Length: 409
Image (cartoon, rainbow, N blue to C red; front, side, top):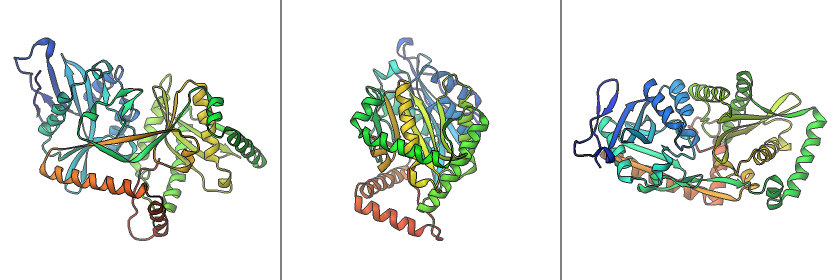
């Protein structure tokens, strides 16, 4: 088996021909292409039959490149000219260094690169390593390939990137097993108390006006729900002293494009839900559908006169019930360990990180990132220190010092 060495031609990065010594039955080729329309079209064609996580979908990559206009590449491993593994990456700056990462940055969670499922059963880790090396040869300005928040498996299929040196992500991902349906779930998760609370919330909502759960089915509804979500999140992050990861115009445009574009699909891969009470949106969730999982990618609640009624909990109750009714096996709350998730969850997933330095500077950055992840995990795994950190952060909110960021969904 041989690999091709990628080279840059000005508009496109293409692999050279495989060595003549390779046989037709055992030929591996590598390509690294600028993420232009042609490369994204090829990536989309591969994704039609590939296994991938939501943030590695063709729709996600297309929306991100359209709205964020990143410096991006698509690196593909082929066997007998048939793609079997592909990385759609953006190149970002960290100080003077350049880092290749999954498109979407912090918004890309539970990652699993697009791969042919049959090939995954006999993964060639060496070929993936050569593909990453080819990225460095094609783009010598890249110092580090950082593949973060990786799923250990997707619907029982192991992530091939686990073959690389890796370490745990600092944040857990929480989910709930839907086996047996909603009634069975409630029997395992304090169902009597949850039903009583849901009825009480319903009465409180009815006391101030009508209430309804909305699924955005038009572009107008997508924009309305996202407008409310962005406003809720901006207020909450400011209150907590956290930088608003949804604040940049290109990020907001990305989510509008992604969620509006999903409406054209027979079964949208991305969907918005909202709880409206007395004509006002009080809670919003944005979800992805991925195989057996319904994943809550982000959520927010309004900080208003009904905040004490926990509209977010009410919406999650209905979302989880619908997930059971529509045949999902897992409701995934995604990254972040929060009390409202613990009320439901019985599955903990430890994501992992893969850092592949391509230069000496990249090696130094990788070491710093590993140490930073360990420190972050230590803080979050210590209830006392984490509580103190959040208290100090809230006190600092609104001051001149820059806010910190964290994986909040």
